[in-house]
Image (cartoon, rainbow, N blue to C red; front, top):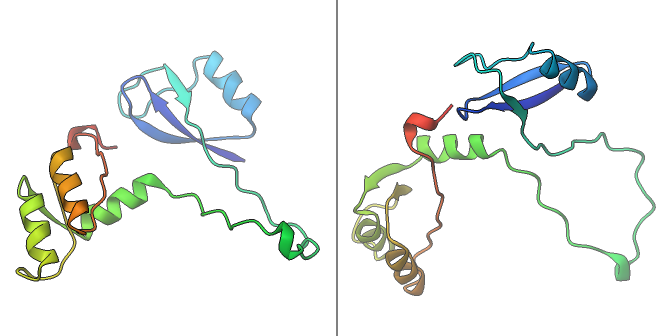
Length: 142
């Protein structure tokens, strides 16, 4: 069995289990796949990372051939869920509150909110650690 992450025309995401890629293609062309949320029949596969079983350990690599380790793929939906459940939403007061935390004028905690590009650039120049995470509107979350 193979699991594909699927998405419909209305951007609803869901999983489908198939015996092979050819099985998915055959079911889709026969109209057997539809979105469980809206019933739409226009369904596409989303790109996924390949996960392979590790084979026998390779021979040691000489120092001159060493390459930096690749980062493990990140499941974006799990990352977003974690951030949302482990941070406080300070809304449009993000830049002000981030500065207060950085300068120890407010309790240390993880926050999220809205800031302009200029505000974000200013925070970075001051040494305040911030990163941008564009999130779709909440009514588009699946």
